[in-house]
Length: 471
Image (cartoon, rainbow, N blue to C red):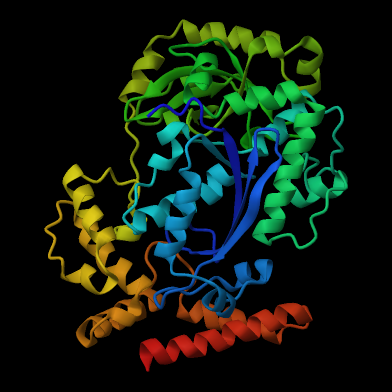
């Protein structure tokens, strides 16, 4: 289908969550607002809440930050399956760019995992129908480093003197209303306002970065092998001077077409030249750049001598190191021989990135989505991927516990008890931690009155959950 004549829009969104682990923790609140490319609102904003299932305990500390309790989401919300269907429908409107503030590294991961848990494609909405995703947090960093004029910048961090890019600090410095921070809709509106400010004050910078949401544009700047030095703006480069460094793209990684092995030219090259394929990722200065995560990359011509001084970049030394690296073709072999190894948590909820599902299972997923909740577990589907059957049981029990027969309910309660007593991986919020943390905070004189109201709700929720699971 040709979408050239479809109206291009941006859907701005934000999540509040019950924890920080996107594989395990759950979405509490979703909010979004669609705009045109000039950032004028289209339609009304949407706000959704997601009910909790019996196999999950929220992190009390997250609840204290957001003020959202299990009772609130269970009263206002829908099951996760219905929530993610609505979100996916919004994100998949042709010619939609989905954007936010630090969404690619945080919120998008929660979205991907919720899609995965509910038998929807985790990635399709990011590219199909000329859709894309974007994230303005690195636009803000680049504005600070490269084009700061017209924008008020908040005070530097007290602990290290680095610039601060918290959304609340930025809106306060620029007198943008954000009363009620950590409410998803408030944060969405603040994000749009910051984008509008940069677009007004630095339109060329804004337009340039909007183009970098497409991988092809990124690859025009970041070329391999041994591409020309690139000015890269990223959080892990943050110093008192800014967040940008000259880097050299070495080679794409063999197992991931979206990742490019790079080297920070502010670092000593001697350890790099001694590296092996087994230890190259431990070399100081080596990192991977993901072309599908909207990196803010600029050609070296952007780096004037004046800007280099401001950013603390020694251009002459960087170019000397670049030429040294180009004389070492063995580095390309090291990068191409490198195999990423990590030991995933052997639990279906944690295995989103453990490979794509086979086409045969995708066809079965369509049957699952079309079936009535009461019929989903009796479809007798012979899955080819072992994750699928585990996900199906959890999918039905988490979303439609009311349809379970007595034997299945007994099995589900057993699963929930084990999950809450012994969560998988490094998840710290188990039954003991939850009760202890809530009681400690309630007993503390340093806990604010409004926080104690949240904690009282959490204590009440724990008692109710105990009766359901262990009663």
